[in-house]
Length: 79
Image (tube, rainbow, N blue to C red; front, side):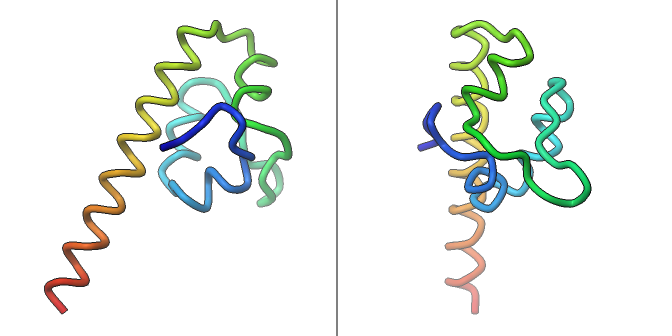
């Protein structure tokens, strides 16, 4: 489960699709190939997102993380 306090660096490691997702929502999380430092919450707040919007991000990103983990488990079981 993705939390508000997750570091951007940890988020993009756990959910590689988060980079595209956040950029589509105006949150730039990669600069010059390096992750932007700070938390998901602080990055969203800097862009003016409300608590409700941040909660939506958390839900979407948690679903992405769960889907990645499920896909990873399924591919391991097929091996």
